[in-house]
Length: 185
Length: 365
Image (cartoon, rainbow over all chains, first blue to last red):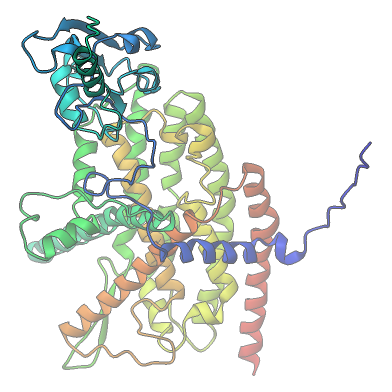
């Protein structure tokens, strides 16, 4: 068992009991702080530098070719803990160049009054289509304004680099298979 | 009394009132700015008006200094809902802000703030609204009335927080009034030592400090007076009346809008008057510096210079009050009482006796 060490409390000296040296040293501290650099950030003009991996408002992104990456698999909708995401799946026009992707969201809504910025949607997305980026200031005058629709989500998200071009590879593989005679769809 | 001098007096009084209220108001700005600087913040720097913003260099500067913050705050107080809780004692509740506000302004009548040296005769006239021979007695008598505002607010509000604030405040004021009053006696003992007859007016105190300030000759008196002024104006570390950390708002918990604004301005007015008193009694008033003759020339230019120098000292004192507020924590109530009765009062009495003896010995030689 640890030994208990009793520290003796020394009686205060007369100078200490008068409080005056303490007041002077306190004044020294506060006055020296007056001339230090201010820590205030002039917010709307000066924005904070956000750390990497910051989880801001969830957004939808395009790939560098301008294709919308979301295929409306609705995994994010199912994983979203506060049920903030609502997706209406839609078909891609069969005549379109990306017709082999088959599906894209007709409407994609994220209710920012429900969103808890947990980032599960970004984590679960198999298409790397939804990202929590650096937008942190969401305001609106009504509940309707606080629901981000598809257009707004793409506007916020912009374009992010793509490392896989998954669907291009898939089409290339299909074309190669077709050329060798294995028609698979 | 003839009509013209009477009207002139009223005009002077109005000007003085405006000036003092402006100083009281801007000491709020000093408080906000100094506290901000001490915290590493910037303080109010956004409020502006369409008339000030477009001025090239001065406009942004004034905005950054927060000069417009004071009228903005005042307007905010005016337009807030004035809510009177149903359980208060209405006459007292309504009278209290006025009683807290008026004494601190009444005192300014006898406070001299500069000098006028006649270029013809070389005679020096102090600038003061009411040249009263008993200036100091008047200040102590009227100044101590402001505690009744706090006490009435505490009792009239009929709420436990206000009540506790009022009780604490009255106990504190009574305790510190004693040492405050006793602390300035030595100053007047020295002034009225046998052979000199300066009286009790505040302007004669300034004249007596022509060569040496009383801060140097009676340092203990100055210290006791300073502590007493801190307690009388309810400033930290003797913030017993408000104690917002344990009593919500203390005596003004139930007040809102303009009535609260009156308390607010009254508090800062008392601080400004207290600073002016300290400057007059111990920092030489409008005298330039100890050991140096006043450089103020005769005529009105000298008057303006002396008034400005006096204001500089007063603003310096106000800044000191603010610095202390944001440096020290509040004393506990029992500590305040103990300090007042067992330390400051005996010290004040001892100070008085020692100085009286010194005056007597000085007279014998």
